[in-house]
Length: 435
Image 1 (spheres, rainbow, N blue to C red):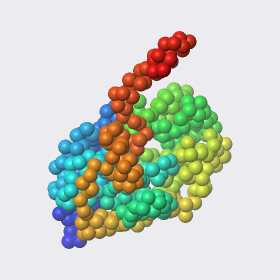
Image 2 (cartoon, rainbow, N blue to C red):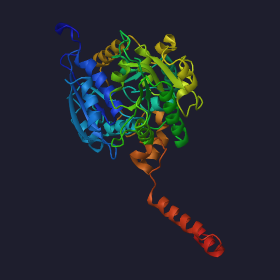
Image 3 (spheres, helix red, strand yellow):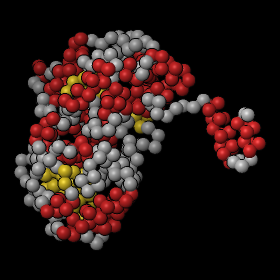
Image 4 (cartoon, rainbow, N blue to C red):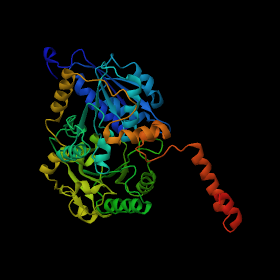
């Protein structure tokens, strides 16, 4: 912690909003760094419909820094919350997924208008960018400071902005924030466990998930003296940003009744990694934490290496392995340290973030555009105006992926369903077609 007379953010008020556990943990990491530099910090946990955080998730979020104030609310109250922020806080971190980043920026434009007395807007990622990377970055391009994980991400963002005639100087390379607080393990555990870290939506197919459970069972049977731990992403009672299939945990739980060394654990990932000899996953961010701690890390290759699985991100990491290879030698680290440093681990990332925030505060920020559209990354002015006029804010904030249909479109859909149900009645079909 910086000495009292050198706290660079003393007197500053910094807030964050987040809807989901992974984003909230990243928000707490950023807020903690600011608090240690003297800032007054607050996290606003905004729940969304059918995605309420569990008590366990809230405890894990608070554990990152118990001295940070946490307030709870709802996402549909974001606009009212933001209304009181202009002129009262200095920095606002948007811990939001891409769709809500767009929605949030549009709401902030509506609330703050042309005022220059607004907070510096910051965005960062809670995990690796392995799908829709440029799209996600451009969703967040309207912020004043965009924190990116790797040089590759930064280069991709710059190319995308250049193609659209946009300034990309708001992006800085900070590395993955959750790795800032990860320290290399000083000693090996007395009993090394093997931990499989589940993801909520990967792999997608039930047969693939059943295969993974079967392989973990066989691994446990082959190594009866080694604890084989399955770390679910969530429990069946918890909801997150992603749709969690959940049945893997229940299958492992049933298997554990007859296989003593096969276990379920809901302990925080870092706590499990401290006692872990080998971390296995398909493509979880936990793999980066594991490598940063010096733990042997294995990325499952049995199902292939594809964008759908996300494990293509780790293709050059040195960690790709089949379950057969894992069984032969689970505890020898094989990851490439140079790859890790290029793909998320930035030793100076924390200082880069703080320096960038201080630069933004020193330079000041201008007003958000006083129109109702977003940055050029979201499309031309003509398209954005058309989208909002005919589809509302939701049309633009979803990137056009889910159209907010007008009543006449719903009527057409009804006519189409009736028509399809009457196939064979040519004259009536033609009548309904308007012929």
